[in-house]
Amino acid sequence: MAHPDSTQDPADEVEVFLAAMDEFARAVRRARGRAMHRSLTVSQYGLLEPLAAHGTAAVGQLAEAAGITAATATRILDTLERRGLVGRAPSQTDRRGVLVTLTAEGRRRFDAHHDWARQRERAFYADLNPRQRRVAAGLLRGLTQLTAELAAGPPEMRHHDR
Image 1 (cartoon, rainbow, N blue to C red):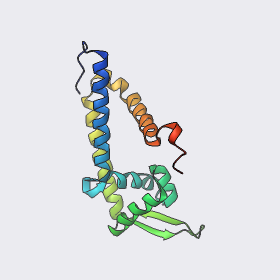
Image 2: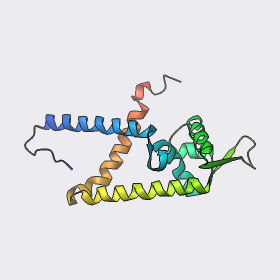
Image 3: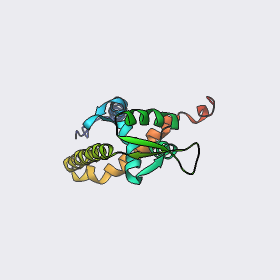
């Protein structure tokens, strides 16, 4: 990983950080719709992850765990069902509810992607120097919080669009 020049002006360091943040955000947006390993998109993987952990789940539960709306989850599940990766059935306890399960092929593809992603993440971590390793988890948690704040928008504008 590149290190900024320690003699760099602090204002320039901020601009370098902001440019890197913009680059990171663009990469995340591009990745959300792109098919990855065995043709799962980031959004599909994000929806399958809680399903793989629980076996069966309601659409609303999956949406909440993935941080998306139920309507978005339903659209993603439509695609996954057409591809034979998930199955849906009416809930026995909620007349309006739908339960989702992974098919054998869905489990195989999810597991393959998960294993590949963890391998890449471990390799990335292994390439960090000891100082970077000490701050990596905290930095990622901070970026997670910042991303949630940016997605919510300015506080004074959060309730105006309802």
